[in-house]
Length: 289
Image 1 (cartoon, rainbow, N blue to C red):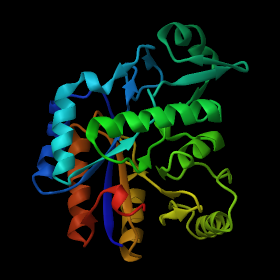
Image 2 (cartoon, rainbow, N blue to C red):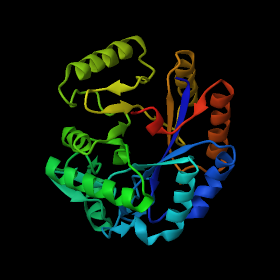
Image 3 (cartoon, rainbow, N blue to C red):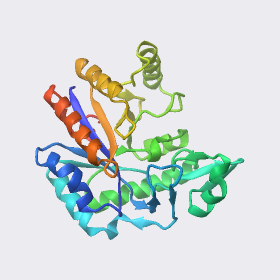
């Protein structure tokens, strides 16, 4: 299964067609596929990627209010070049300080950031009931907009807890990512065996990430390998070569807003290397079934 998946996170109301064309037109023209993680009701984020400055507001911005990006992405979906995945509800960060949880607004962060805080992703601290409701609403909302069935979920900030996992399962979603070392998945024989395989692999390959599809019984997962300005390229290519040599899928995980300048060129070079070594461009939904 020599498959290459390209996952792009954070498409939302704030994304422009120009943002996507700048990074991906050259790939779409070559019939290379992209799986987009889409935020249904995004809040605005300032200084993305910089935890020392980043903050958000609290106003929800529904994707439906950006007709240009919807029309553009809908055409790509029809062409078979794009998959729409669910990326949380509004991707609102929170943080914990002194046992209390606060939203990551400018006011709250100006007050507490310098004191030492623990960042919390949208899906690793809320209750199952709340996450189930948001997952269902977000999934059905995007399905209605794009006239598709959504199969996969990408956790905001790559964080998810047991309540978040249960919310996904109960909404018939698989997970893009391999989150955490603890076993907080559904309790099945298949799931326990998968966990044992993960531990065995880690003991034998400590500098690599578990590369196989993880089947927990009620849902499946596949690791995404972060392609960012701080990526260790020696390890990144080593991971790809391991997947290639063992006929395993490789999932790039990136953000369009980070792909610029030198990083964009490295991104293209890596894709060319993978495809030139026999890998095939696919959507995540084609292999997580």
